[in-house]
Length: 391
Image 1 (cartoon, one colour):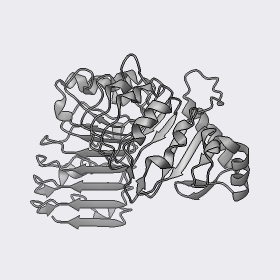
Image 2 (cartoon, one colour):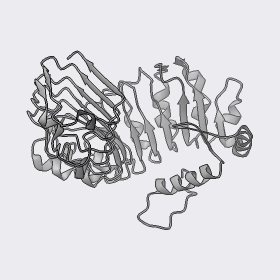
Image 3 (spheres, one colour):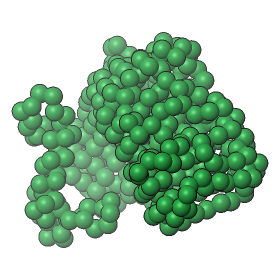
Image 4 (cartoon, one colour):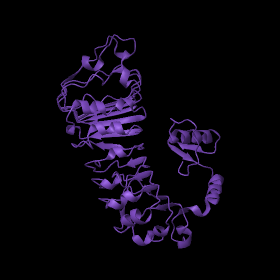
């Protein structure tokens, strides 16, 4: 895909979908093999062949690499150290046609990088398509020269203390129109760039911080039609009008498989393909009608409700037949769990038919749990694990 080698005759088909089909075909022919549930490996002989074919264009930075060899590379991978010095990458900054700059390391640690490195990345490596700065704990801001990376497709800023992105990422003169993946999960981002809607090709955003201005309000999401994967919507208290939430058109984003939101908006309707839903800090006394609606939540597998301190009742969830994991945490207003939780007990479908994990945590005022079904064995037929803690 990065080399524009994928052909997709269907105009409305995303290039990622074409690439996924190629990958699935190779997997079915055992070119790739599954190692674990989420890991893919290649046979050692194929790895050696791929390394040979890629030759001088793909380099893993080692201390013994010659400067000449690194400078000719298009794709560069390196192992992170606790302190990555400028000298370590000095030769890389001369690789003017570098497309990929990607560090690998343990997900259990954070790393430190020289302050001189980041400006050099954005100023000297103008042809970068993939850039990962994740887990560098001392990167708190990005230079305005970031907007010069007009070819970049993938930018990973996860688990960094960055609080805002430079406006140059979306300015009319330097807009990074090719950017498809912008990852900043696990950081402290406080605001979105004013013209985030200019990133029309954005596929993954991860987090959207609702602002008060027209260029950063919730309605801006309608301008990003290709969003997929997980999306966490923060600071919903900044939504001025309910109509803005409707204009976001999250129902139309069929490729969003995981959704988290923080606030009290009833108009944020999910799409029916959603598999994971997390609601934090909801400020209403009762949940919106769509929470538990089988027409909208029919495919949800994992549901988490947390820090909803003003709610005095739980939503009816018994007919969500795909639901396998349910976590309910920090509901100060809940005194009893009963009819509202089970909804239509007369349905022919067993209540919580697929639920395997159920957790109640930090509900200090909860006193009564009524089953409200004639045959207790009919409810939770597949439940394997029940946790009740600090209740």
